[in-house]
Image (cartoon, rainbow, N blue to C red):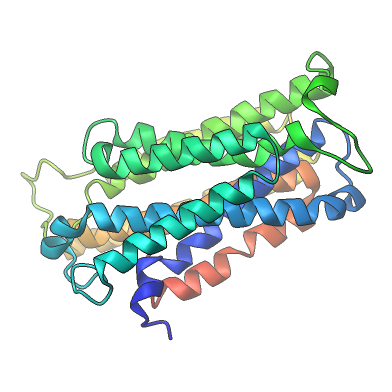
Length: 331
């Protein structure tokens, strides 16, 4: 079953990186109106699930559009991908793209105009990125922005809450109170964190191709140690700032430290793989693991907002992603 070309086209292991974005944005939203209890969270789970399904649909549509626009280059660099190998017909891929984008947008209409607006912006941004911008210098900036927008997608539910235990609308929100101010500061930190993580991931992925060899004069060569140092500094900064913004600071700090340990282990493995002298394979390894690390980054903030139990539940999504990635490529 895992050899099914449609599952490979959709890069199924990747979808587990999407729900944590929505959950994180959602939790920041409800924490800003002081209703973040297990009871309130369980009340809003149906809405959260619908928004997650919408986000996953948009994400899958984006992955299909990526392969559609890359068919020519994939015939050279990734000839075994479903489209260049003709295991999936192009017309079928177009239909799948339309279905997923339509489903994602229609689900967003169940919430509020801000959620629907963000959904529309995501669709347009994804298509423009895949068609025109993914090979330019703006690539990491745009991709980072798109993924950060997914956090806002979850947060946008704030502007359309209804029913018990809360009757919150845009007009009823007090943006001047301390809780809202702290929540917005946390939101900005989360958006910057996700943007930075995806920026690094996208920058590295621009060097990903199994055809390139790692040589001393290769202009595409990346200093892996510098990336590790920069990311470690990034974790120190968000750990220091986030500690004062979350409800469970020590749970948050524990998750950030755990993330740092995993990052060091991954890049230590990368440095060992440098002996293979194959840049593409190394870059694929980094990109795959940084996609999975996004789950852990989100779970650190989720643990800080709602406690270690929900944080661990979110972090557990790395398991199916890792297991499936052994059979289906994530990159």
